[in-house]
Amino acid sequence: MNAVSESSAPVKAEFSRRDRGAKGLMNDSFLDYFKCPERYLRLGLTETLSPARGFFRFGPGNIYYGRLSRENALTDGSERDVLKEVKVEEGRISLPFDVDEVVDNLRLELYTSSSRNKTSLADSITAAVYYWIRPLLPVNVRKHLQRLHLRGWDQISFPRWPVDRSVNELFETLMLLSIKSQKVEKIPFIWFWPDGAPSSAIMTHDVETKTGRDFCETIMDINDAYGIKASFQVVPEQRYDVPTAFLDSLTKRGFEVAVQDLNHDGRLYKNREQFMERVARINDYRGQWGAEGFRAAVLYRRQEWFKDLDFAYDMSVPNVAHLDPQRGGCCTVMPFFVGNLLEIPVTTTQDYTLFHILKDYQANLWKTQIELIMEKHGLLSFIIHPDYVTTDPERQVYEKLLANLAELRRDRGVWIATPGEVNRWWRQRAAMKIVEDGNGVRIEGDGSGRARIAYARAVNGKLCLSVGQ
Image 1 (cartoon, one colour):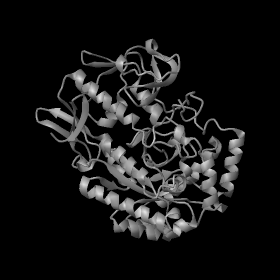
Image 2: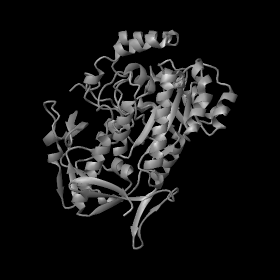
Image 3: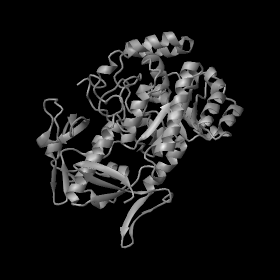
Image 4: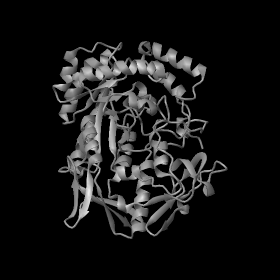
């Protein structure tokens, strides 16, 4: 398999979940995802887990990474389908892997040593030189260099292009198994989005240059024409001046401000010492600007260091990163917590990549990604740079995207929110619970007035999720 790198050695992360015994429960991530009563899910391991890690399948299509039980341990590196090895008896589901461990491996990108951990000296020098001269390079030169760097991206089989939904489909398979094991018609859970919205969408704008900063007023006018507020990710140092009046011009119109890296030189995560020095200044800007969110430049990331970011949410982890400098991907279309930080993943391809790498001015890729994400009721998350939509062709594509989102809101009920609103909702939902008693089924917790009870059913062997009865 051509995965994100040649090495498959696991990354040791201090935030990984603890190892469990052979019969221990491992359902936290499932319950966090569906927010259903715990009594419906009884998970355990078939046997003690083998120390060896590898790739495997759980049903057709999706690839997972982790340890399997000793009797089923991967010994030949093959991607064996272990779904048939699941045991369902007496209301209990016994699996040959730890669900929480496998989910962490995907969402936290622990499934392989990526370029952030295995970088040659030559690559490091090349990257340093590139980011030093990058502001001086015209777009035509930059996109040529980037195409050279990205050669072979379309041969990568994992994560799955153009949207990887492995985590979501793992949870859905477990829900089907739960319905079967509990011998029930349906299982109640708290719907993913407020007021029963089928999916959510956010628009974000990474401001990279003075040109982009000066174009933000126009971007806000365009967004407001479609009734779509957004978040602007602003670089605090070196790229351009950031006067208070500029930040106020954004927030006074109902848009949000987030901190984007420190100076956008691509070296935030170069080493731990430098990161700690920079993150202290980044956190200071959070306080000065009253920002809740953060995004690293170029979507570089090391999730094991996220605990040092003094923010409510991060937006640096792509769903699938074949066309980004740091490959990988979190393999989910839903937000998830990394410690106390909410990760709001980037689930669609960036505008620069669409225009200058793929040369897609019909936005066909976005249309495909929108449908794939909405099939799982996920979050449509977009990055549009004010720097790259200053000319008519790109601006027209962006306006068509906004018109499409406005249509999805009108015709299909998609909840278009800001990242801050998604963060507040997801935290409220995480604290809610479903109560089943003599008075029926209800949701308790802050914000429950906007929450909706939904039901999972098995229909002709497939999972059907619906709001209400």
